[in-house]
Length: 229
Image (cartoon, rainbow, N blue to C red; front, side):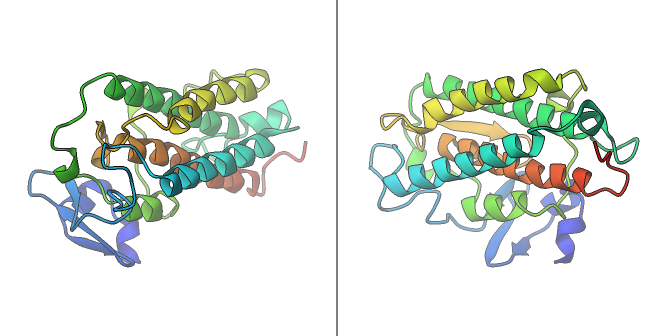
């Protein structure tokens, strides 16, 4: 699919079909789903803005899979492997992990902040990102975007501290995701690339973003010059 190689600004100016998922610009530079998908506001979910059991199960499954992949990928690697960069403008495994953690820490904080505010009275009619589109795009490494400066890695995360900091960040996300009382569909946050999304979607993006960058870690480790030890 050719459009996946387009830059985000061009993507935002056009109406695009991603597999069976359509989305388009609203004319003001914001990407909007062509129509709400059932996953974003499922009929089976509670009517007060909480997420349903299937949504929670899906979210927690993504988190668990992403965590295992990340921790397995850095278990037992050396400092040389941690710091190896495939090219000057490419991230090392350490930088990828640092980015994953920074994004999760910020995202969990944003969701926690949103949940402290009053639920949006019009949450059922809110125009939000298309969940199916988010899942498809985030897990496709052909779709490239540049990380905002505020979440870009600085290369300061030590290998020895990585697993602990990762688990701490993940615990904050899981505390929210596991809550059966949080009105995740009635509170909203803004995303730098995907515009408005509800807090459930924001947590889902955290897990999918983690998986996306686990693929990047695999790409770094598959490089012919990656240190053998």
